[in-house]
Length: 588
Image 1 (cartoon, rainbow, N blue to C red):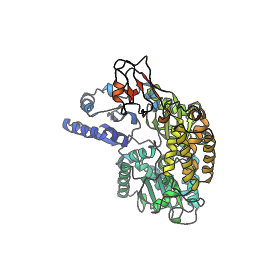
Image 2: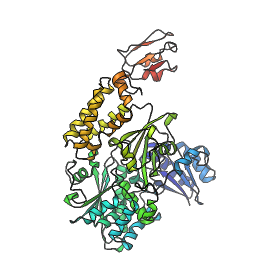
Image 3: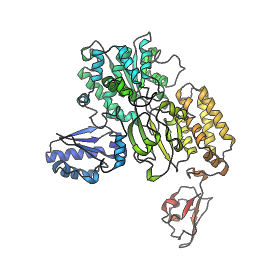
Image 4: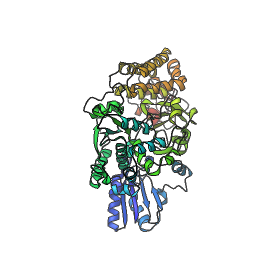
């Protein structure tokens, strides 16, 4: 039977995928075509949504991008009925070498099912080796053997810390008290990050299977998924999948006729970024205010309800079924000596192919951006990449040959983080980007630690002065001093890493800071307070369009004669630059 897959992740739905689904179902029904329409999660190429894939009976696949409702009839009539693909809508690997690189450079382990299966169908998941790993564990392996297999795979926590997953499980298993708990940290809060959301929406059963295997390994019978309430689609799909597992006997008592029992509950978080930190997450899960506590004791010894608890993030759990089914050595064959496997990244910012990708550890930043991501939008110049979210740092283009490896990335002053990768071009002001991320972390600070609560505020005030042209060169030393105090005196990862965007931008883009302070200019023409608009007399023909667009009447002059801008009135909104067809207005 011919299969039609329609990407219905958040990205697809936002682009209008529900309209495409409804239209396709209507047309297929009216024409009485023997085709199965499958609702899938994110296919990965978010920049080409809405995506529709048609797989013929012989297994050949055709992927359509940027599908609009008006294209549906043509696809049905020409492709499904006449058997001739609609070439102008196809995303063709054969015709486009850059698209071929996008797919061929990826190795999909975590995303193995995303965009292929119906995430609401347990039968679809089972048809692709789903729950085989769990069956193997319950029928053939001991808890110690499971932990050894995960250790041997080299899997490190994908939530940002990069700690050995198998070692973490071992600590929880050997902790003396019981009962024990498994927690999935799905509180993804980084601006520009959507890895966990897409996995939860596209392949929720893989997370459930990973959690059940972890429960068996450490001796837990209960698990919790702490997921952001802002991810309604992910929440709905998780709850449906949990119901399906109960119906199939995969959750509850005597799983697969064994003596093992395990259950999972979903907890919707209130959206506090600090709850991504494991001790703050536990407090929130217990119904308390989400603030971190001193460690040790670590959650593996004293976690949820004061009992041994293992916490991993979504991507970590999604790796587990594949590792158990295929073997640790096969997983360890991917990546570098100290960073095994693959890593999922959310590509965002000034990049041509924004979306979700999964690449082997060891690939360089340049390969990810220029080959997988297709390079910079509008053929701009690659300037820097922000890795690790607000707690990460900015890596300059000059260091683009650095490998995607936990230790190598940490050496730059950034961190791998959970996988957000925001690309910047020459139009990005690095002082402003540092201010943006510090504003976020300052707002999200829980307030418990004085250095985090007040120190980040003082740093933010420094950055605001600099972007307004009121900074002093001494501010750079003050920023560095404050940063070190905050890093060394904060309890949790939020405070300890909050200064990273500032420290890395000062380290690699100091001249840009000095231009703001000494020259009172923003080289990227981004900081409004430092901009000045000027009309070029030789180019201005006096058409008056700019004057008509100015909301404060700051532009004056006679018709067919050069105009001028009154800087005292100008609010620097930029409408005049956009309106001028003759490029007669420049920013200086």
